Length: 425
Image (cartoon, rainbow, N blue to C red; front, side, top):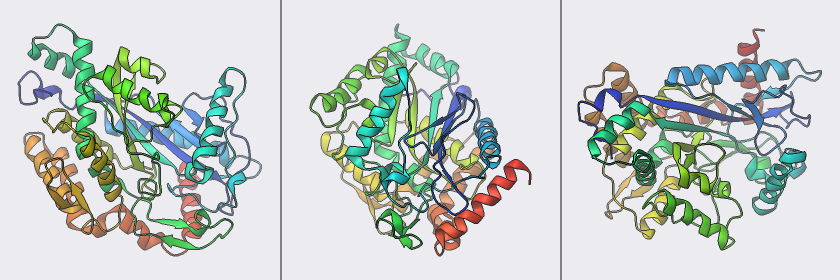
């Protein structure tokens, strides 16, 4: 783990790179999914996710949370301008939970051709295995790389002679610690408590559903495999090989099919062989779209993600046995609930606490860790603590209050407002 208190390391702790990936559904003016082909002039930062009507914005790597959110705003604006100028104006749906769905054909698989045809084949496989409804969820992935100067300064203290092995082992241990504590990120960024009835009953549009969840996509109803993954965190090769075993035994077909809140990423296109050659960053996949802010993610939550990752990379967490990893999956699902006083987090030492109590223990530790880091860090941690002290400040509680009755109708009003903010009408 990082030598976080050492004078040569501490000044570099919050140096790193941020990349945000934001998915959004294109809809028509009535709250139904758009059926037009995507066309964003081949901008490499604006692509499609599962569906032809699911836009994905990928920012370049940015050095600060503020710049990452600004970059996301820039590409959001390009998308909004393009769809506002269509012959039949479209909107971007601002929630993780989809609006009206008439049936699976409402969620058309993204079409690729030629050398990229395998991307469509992969989506067809996912459609058959998991159903298209689940693929209609949207979210944000936060990608973070520890700064090069930070890693070099820390490596110098180890006395080792293989920097790449050091870096990869640090990321693997960070991933293991995120399995232990990362559920707190689900809890603080949950923002999808309400959904339309058509998601659970085909064609029944216009009903408002609340199922006791703060984030449906991160709950038992969301993005999970049919098993609890047990991964090997001994080193990068062991980690990659443990994913490969699920492919070899037929439980998944592709590495990217491992639906887990934390993913290690390699330099270049994602692959297991690439992971063995070098880990470049860690990806957090549990972030909901936040409709309460224009960008879809609050800058303070991006900062908190960084603060959490750096703290976790500096803390000697427990090594996880198989049973601990099974429990960790349940911890993530429990953190997706609406009332966090009624569900438990069970730690590897066997202790169990409500999500509220367990989260405040983590924030206590982070406040002590960052005791000399200034006002912006203190304010960010206090902002997150309030979500557990005062549940009405959580995004899910605010969203249920405003959008809990007439979810799609009120969501359409917000979608139009957001577009006006971007295109200047």
